[in-house]
Image 1 (cartoon, rainbow, N blue to C red):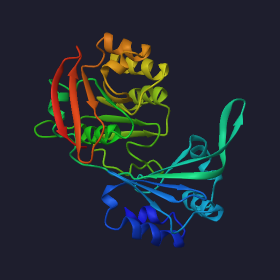
Image 2: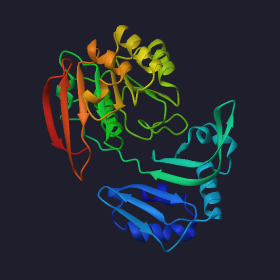
Image 3: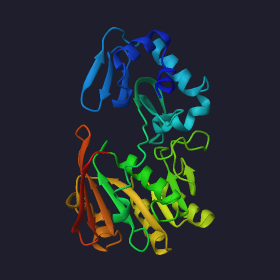
Image 4: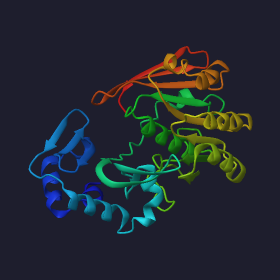
Length: 307
C-alpha cells in the first residue's frame, strides 16, 4: 500500500511523508496536499502536519502527470467528476478552478488541491451482521451513516460474503453498480478489492441506468449500490425490488429519524420497502456503535465493534 501511494509524489516529498508516517500506514486515512500549504496527514485518531516541505506548482504538475500517466486527455471523465482512482483502489480527490459549459461542469482546471483517500479493505467486518440480514433469503437492506462512518467498507464486505458464501450459506449471483469506483475500485474494469467469486461489476455507470442494465444482462439475485440519493435512484430501486431482486444499498444520514425528514426516502420507509436498516455511528478509534432495525423501525440487534 505504501508504495502505491508514495509513487505519485515527487522524490523530495516521498521521504518526508514516509518519515512522518513511519509505521502507521495502517492508521492513515488521508493525505491532503494543498499547493503552498503544509501537507496534512489525517489518521484515525489525530491530524498531523508536514511543515518541512511545502508543495508548489511543480508538485501539482508532477502529481497530475503521475495520476494520469502523462495523458490528461485520457482522464477527461475522471477530471470532470473530481476524483481519480489509482492502483490499489486509493481515490484521489481534486479541486481547483472549474470550467463550465451551459451550466454543467466540463472540467477542473488549475488543480491546486489533492486529497489522497487511503483504500483499505477490511475482510470479515460484515460477518457478525450477515445472520441478521438473512432470513430465508437476503433482505432488502439500507445502510445509513454519516461521511467516513464506514458505509462503503461494510457494503463491500457484505458483497464479498453474499457472493462467495458464509458458514452454511452458498454464494449468490451479485451485481454491483459502482458509479464512483468506490466499492470495487476498478482499474480498467478490474476490481482492486475482493468482491467475491460470483460478483459482476458495472463500473463508472450512473446508478439508475446501471441497475436496469445489470438486471437485464446479468440476472443477479442481489444488487449492490453505494450512496443512493436522487429520484432516479429511488425509482430504479423500486423497479429492481419489484422485479424480484434483493437490493443492498447505502445512504448518507444520521438515523432513521433523519431519513424520515426527506420526502423521497420517507416513502421507502413508510412502504416498508427495506426489511433491514443498518445505522452506523461515528467511528471513535476502533469502536463504533452499529444498530440494526427491522421494517417497522424496531431495533433487533446492536453491535459495538468498529469497522
